[in-house]
Image (cartoon, rainbow, N blue to C red; front, side, top):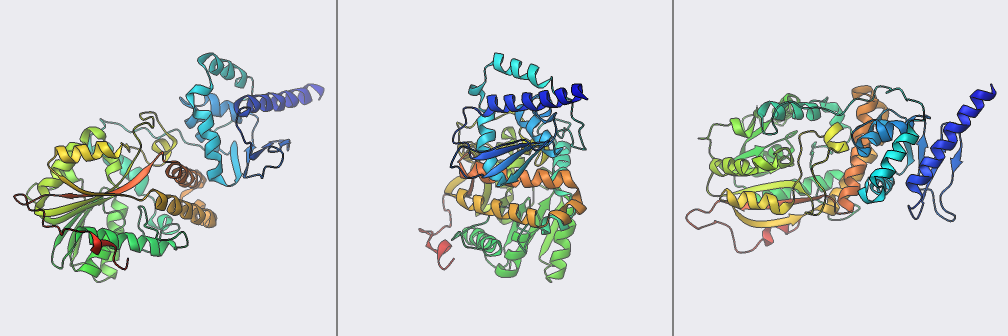
Length: 433
């Protein structure tokens, strides 16, 4: 028994010493720490406890530091396995995580010494936490794209219904006020997209990556257009078809499980839109993406692209939690890179508008809804998916809030012998919106 007590005390002491080394220069310390045996460290005097970091297993730090190729993925695996947990404001942990991921904090010698220390802790069992998703094939292959989309979107539609708005709009909302509810903010976004496209009755609209159909259903109902929505998700396509039939719009809505690269090049559309899909196009494939959409559009038409970007000084290329557990096969590039590719393909850039603050509000609302429906979500898709998506919502809220990610609309025109067909001002977009 004395040997066992010494072992337990050493694991606790070692864990606390490692945590102190990792967090020692983090200030102000606005969080508490609680170990598996109830040992607690309080925040700095006078600081509120924004969250409590729970080290639920003696081997948690070993998993976090040595369990994967990067500290970010190691921390993710420890969280998904419930060896590490967070009580309180989940978004508030991300400044701390960013502190740990900052390469300048630890030298190579520091990292080797830290790895040796955590290996004195016991090995924690995986508890069902998956390895990061691995996709086969080249970055530009259709097969890889289809597998990635299936991984993310072919979850039960009922899962998405539990945290999205009533129209199931899976993209950034447009808030006029922080007090807006999600349904109002999403409908405002759909209306703004339709106004920017200047849709007219009888026009044919192509929606590249139509999701759960919220935009094409709204546009068909409110603006009298005919739409082709394409997606690589079987579940999404079936859901859109059912919703169109229920709304009496089946004769106006065509939805296909296909990639934009598989569409007949002779297809012709009056307007093109793509909302939240361009992140699935590799940087190397952007010019091809814009060339193809350019060919689909009649002269004098416009293309509204809604997508994410990131500042040029944000590091890229390393595997992240999101790309490994939530949204594989995605690549977010600077907005300037996207616009350069569009111009290379022949598009005229007419307008760019950012919605970064709206994304923060929406992601936080998604997180609240995920938490409120935890039991039902875990029943539908399991504990690991629930924890991954809840962490993902908090993470993107933090990254948008701190300008590590952005979201934007860009309106692209295909002039007809120099004539854009657009009015001189944009006042009609925002009137009474």
